[in-house]
Length: 236
Image (tube, rainbow, N blue to C red; front, side):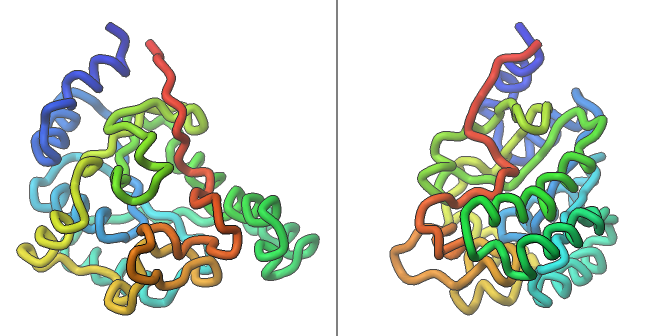
């Protein structure tokens, strides 16, 4: 049995707390990437309150909502847990703005994906160097694309096993857990924002739209920035 299959089979029937406990006891170099969304706040709560040896980090694209920065500060204060912040390379950003314009991502899908690559994908690659397991807050119900993903999978792009402890949680389960544990969340959620990314690329959603309909809404199709692949590969 290769390493991916071992992790997948070991975590298959475990809930989020037992799953995080298993990886903490059996694996090393664990990192949790938090975007400070509702799911990520649940995972931060679980990691901090159970004192799991998992390193937290977040990506600051340079164009986040002020409410996101406020939540980052509040979360660190509430849980007394460090959250490393990774930024895009300033020269890459400057070259992009020079060639595409300050809001060039609106002009084409190619431009938008290039911006996401500079501001999100490249910093994530740096953050995941020498990582044994990448933990995320992805859930199956967030979008049609994410229904193709799995609880444990291999990230071809990042060359690491990815674990999504809350993959099968429903919207109601997330909301109830947050309410019952008084977990701080982004104040934008109260105004119709579900999936919250960069300010120019995120809007509130309408009733009946999926969670990620407010991301890059002008494109109408792609709802991923390149951080998460749907391909799964068997590795040893």
